[in-house]
Image (cartoon, rainbow, N blue to C red; front, side, top):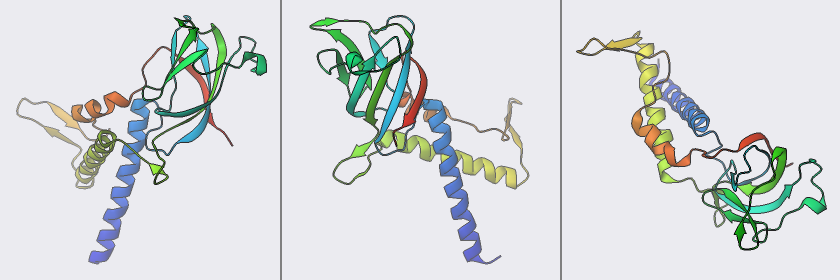
Length: 201
């Protein structure tokens, strides 16, 4: 096989590993990660009259509309106003219900909250995704682990045994503790259940 063919094949393997690592990181964090800011609609279930709900695609760039409606009509009469009815923490991706100067609670029920917003890693100056370095490192480290595993499998090695006799198998993906630590700040936290999230056409 020519050297050029080997290089092309290796480039393809690297791209595949990066794509797989991005997919795994997204699954672990339970949200999109390496995306430019996009418009989303989310419907939230409220079970315990929470004061704060967590949007899926943080950071929040802007809020378009927030409706609170236990009848799920989402009309003009159910439209909430930022600062008067809820407070936004853009970095944390949260909406806290307020009434005047008091912290309030979101209306309980299925799909009672409809939020339309722009979220994601926007760099306004370049119009590109401004992804945090920690997140980049997590995906790169995981991609390297995937490449190493695949190399072992291609060489016919399906497991290894350490001095204590413990066996590590390479059939499944091994996610190291340092990768999990890097991903921890980007994972979704909170008690809100998301029914759906959809990109606005």
